[in-house]
Image (tube, rainbow, N blue to C red; front, side, top):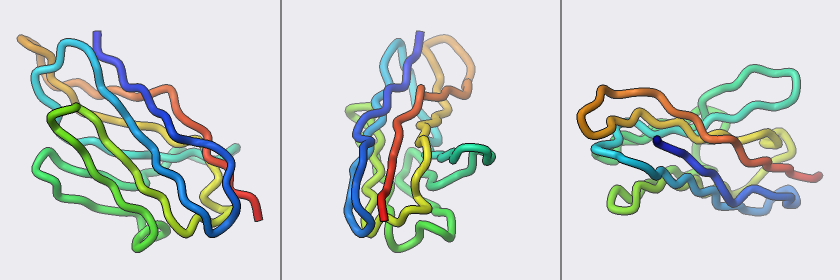
Length: 120
């Protein structure tokens, strides 16, 4: 069984920083795309940033220049460095990954989420 576990969320003042982590565990053969999504109350879950296994990245316009996505393939872990945080960044942040287990096919997995709250 594959699990994605996020950590690093919390309460921070506007202008501050947080670093989120997402660790994948289980019988993993390979991890392709990894991504962060966020979802504010009453709103749809939307893509924040995505990173390929080769390290190519893409960001939502709202976070470009403020957030940095990275991954450590040896540790099956992804990070999101969040700087210059704004109150509108407040949301639950979810880790997403396309993972292939040994002898299996690529499947889409989600973490349980970590709350980020930015106070003004």
